[in-house]
Length: 580
Ligand code: ARG
Figure 1 (cartoon, rainbow, N blue to C red):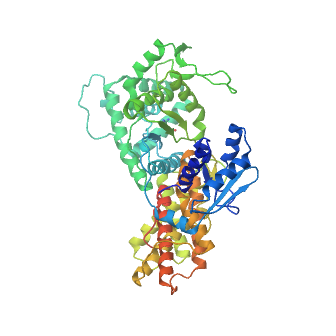
Figure 2 (cartoon, helix red, strand yellow):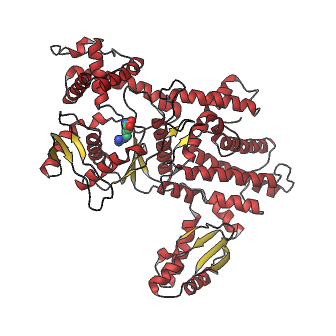
Figure 3 (spheres, rainbow, N blue to C red):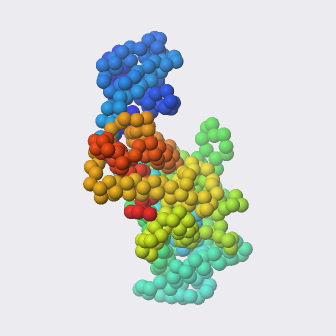
């Protein structure tokens, strides 16, 4: 798909160049005052400054050059030298015909999202990371990036030592603790996912109240990281059973990753990295720990050093994150590494990024934290179950499906479909409710989880947009059944013009959403598109239209709207049911 604004920028750029001015002044954007004009260019102001000339004068000369271009229906100079432009309906319709994909941009983005932890169930923070990260990976791909997504599983921290020491104390599988045993270890895991979900909270609680237990867990963590065979074997079981459970959950969410690497995958890179940092004078021993100072001149807030090795020898979250940058630069040479992680980890990433830049570990990559706020319960605190526990993803999806089912019944939708199809529609609608609600707020804002509202078929919701798409599908199906041709879109009315302009801004909107790493821009766009379609459809009686050419053109507009709506919903990770 092409960006009309980019096409027009090229045209205006040539006009500026012909006036002896830099082509970049010709940048055209969609009008921010659609009531005044369709497109605007404000470059004459900056060009005038550079050339020490009068901006209205320059704007006038540019406008004069554009007069010959038959695509413009109106070019006006406004205020101090803004160039306001409208295109003819024919030109707009012509642009509508052009439906290519964005060409590869030659750049690689590594997107780190998900961030699940071994042995711990997914919670709502991981849900947000998954939904937002998945949307960004889809968007970046659609915009021509090569995208590598990596879940970066938490499999190497203190929680591993907590599990191991707890299993040791409970004597569940003594063989893994027998230093005299030299393998091979059993192939079947001594613990299931359910066991781990019970063992981990118990171990973590014990460590909070009992320093001796914490010490035991710390020691087990260090031993694991140092390669003690029994611990490694036991740990591998944790990883395997958790991964089965985790991938089942991400699948049910419709989210996938290119890589399931864990923090542990960089273990061998850590020792040489630490040596290198010490040798180059970046890391120092402080109170027995190895730290890397990252404060910079002009810091407004205190910036603590990045901790690399604890005094008792354990590695930290930041250590593996820093080594992972080395690994990613080595393996993928990315232009951008984007971390889609809870905003509360912002300081951590700031420290890691500074350390990486300071030690020049980043290759050509820009490092960026795309943080997000929390999903809260009605009490304004992070969402919990009724019983006060952390809400599991699996239960959340089940809840949304139940809610979707009752909404569908309320709307009288799908009442006579087979049970299987009904269940599938409810699943799709439930997921759409959750995903759209999550993505439609700016990612940094916290929001309140309100399934009741998210699942409504009216207003700015996922189900409303699915329904809008399903309705267009059924219009087109009916047209086909009646033997009507679907033609090429044309513009005859204000509603068609407004809809065409909305359709044509798709590429620009996708670029804007990418630039701000802001899925909510896509949500706004999809909602506005559905509304403009609604007005168009309300105004024109397509099926009963007797002018066959006109009917064909309008069906063409329906088909085009459906294609764009489906594309945007797909970027949001939302499926459109066949029918409802
Ligand atoms: N596992 C971490 C958590 O649950 C998130 C990991 C995010 N990614 C990263 N490279 N640090 O909070």
